[in-house]
Length: 610
Ligand code: CUA
Image (cartoon, rainbow, N blue to C red; front, side, top):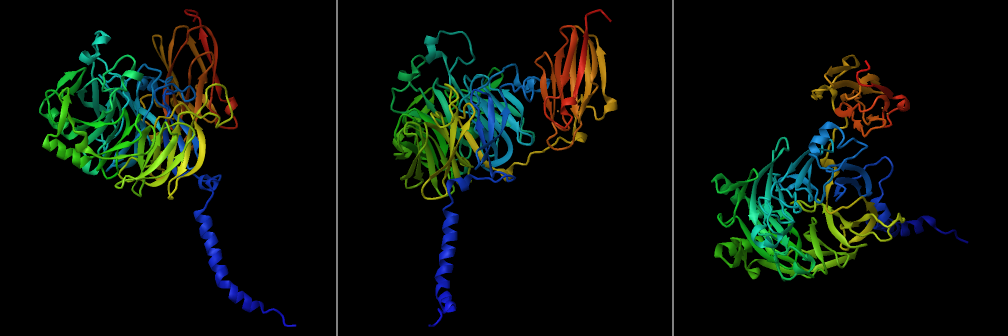
């Protein structure tokens, strides 16, 4: 019997085998499971930062993507007792006396229309403010108040070179605010669109100018880009000017508006002195200055106002409609030139709907917000449908839809509102998380869902809970952010800094006592302190460490004093010696094997006893 000629069989089989093997490899690569697509092995880092607003918690959540891991909560408008935000003197001053804010829309700074990784801004809907967080250390550095703006919701979207942040009224008020009958809403109340300038070197914010508007509710905004550079677009509802039962009264008209603001023209008007000053801000009245702002009719109670990456189209998400309305920037310019108007409100021309609208895209029920990818597609969140619709720019056809659980508000794609969207993922921020996580009582967390948008069909990858309450988010390529990991001690310019233990001391001036203290593994110097009842004590503590992640804490027993001091940092906290007795203090942030020993004592003598 002949033996089987293995060599020949192998030769015959080898080519198909090779082809098959390569095919399998390729298929595996393309056909990664959802788990593989979001898996970041131990020791590896995520590829993207997602900044999600923390709503009425007044904070911002920093998540890594694709893993969905929560890395940090940045305290902004609300105290954080772990870090001492709102407790130490520096952060108390930045918070300006408020202890809450309603943080809705994180906005990364931009250069040439793309995120540059320098700063993160966020609005406070409640108290009319904008905060700036430095992405060098993820710390809130500044909070500015926008006078005349009642409920700063449509904010703080940035212009393409961060020339300006915008703000706008959600709850119209009298401007300037004064006592008038609420029933005279139409006559006496106003909305305001605000522009806040940003210093391109320091990031410092200033109120640049404002535009007086009819008392509508201004909702969201986006700056023009590329061809529409120099403009900004604000959605608004309640063109009915209702002030009572908005649920019914503000949904009467089939169309509200997107307000198109020519901020370059506004700059000129300001230069020419065409403004009046109200509460210290230069305010343009469109009844007196023409050509600054126009209304684009948009169905129906529009929420999102999103400019396409090429700047050619403005997409309005009419939250009570079944379509998104696409306006053409070029058509708008022509209509303005031709005077194609349909009346005016408060001196602001209303452009004819047919003259500006390019398309109505039948995306589904409750369109809210649109983001873009790198392939010419748009993604719109659908609140009522609980879904995301994918549609093509130019042909305006809906090509895919994916359900989300439940009730999506906003969505964020990677660099999805810039001139250079990266594609990859879209993150759905869902308002209601019924049953998605282990139950923890009546209040459920919100949820985010990560969706792969790199293929033809969207693919659901992951969901994770998000702390209260992401309204909006932005996702940036992680390579664009390079935080410093320690503060160099030799660059510490704090007036109360000391650089070595022999500079540690206590200085008394009447009943003000300044304690210059150092913290270093694993002790404070000085650590035995003696005060008198009624002393106002200012602890100036410098952390002398220069090693990464060696943060010390400083907490005083029987008090509200606690804070964290980062390597190389100096912080000041005030403590009042109210009652005679002994007060231990200790390091509250685990720092070393002898962390437990890092402590001291304060002795407070009764008044006049020494
Ligand atoms: Cu220092 Cu714990």
